[in-house]
Amino acid sequence: MEPSHQSERYYEEFVKGLWKENPVFIAVLGLCPALAVTNTAMNSLAMALATMFVLVCSSILVSLFRNIIPKEVRITTFVIIIATFVTVADFTLQAFVPKIHKDLGAFIALIVANCLILGRQEAFASKNNLKLAVVDALGMSLGFGFALFCLGAIREILGNGTLFDVPLFGDHFEPWVIMILPPGGFLSLGFLLLFFNWLKAYRQQARTKTQPSTPIGAPIHIKSKG
Image 1: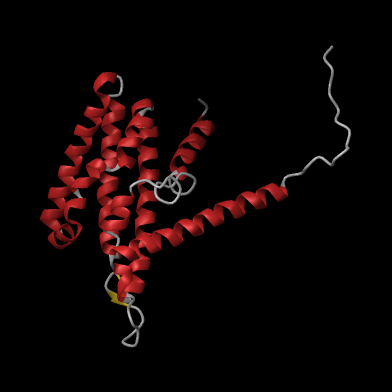
Image 2: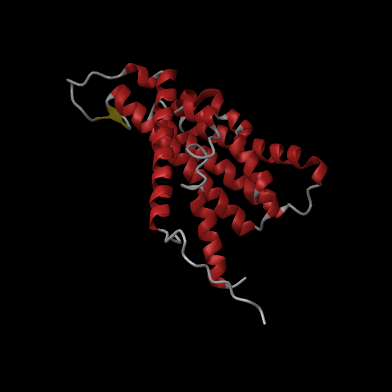
């Protein structure tokens, strides 16, 4: 593969996770942590970083050993690899940021069951080289983190009047308590999905309008061979 085409491939694999195939807003994956731990921006950021660590490290190992892992036990092997890095992330958060670890609770361990991570191992890392696997993992994890941060920021701003515990509106602001409760997660996700689906449809419609169309009744020239 030529260097220019190779660079373009890396760019496409990285960017697709941010927008075109965003895990939460487009593929609608990983909704359990997206709804459960996004009551504050800090919790969202911590979960996003933990997920990024697990996804990138798992993709590295799976890609390196893709030709060695027997197909019959590949899913079991992927789960063991993912669980190993989830344990590392769990103990690291518990040691350095115990308050955030307590807030996230069991949802750190549940990263093992996140269909985003296992899905990327099966669909991509196990079928591509190391560089592509890392680029794909970074793009998908950043897209996932972007979605979690959007949810966490909206819920914290409206539910507490703060962002990263910094007051934004003064003493006269009346917090929308529902936003930091479970219903607030569903409301925020619903409105964000509505917005991104509308934006996707709008861009497709605009792209269709800019494409030239063949007028009705216009002659169509067909080249004959030889």
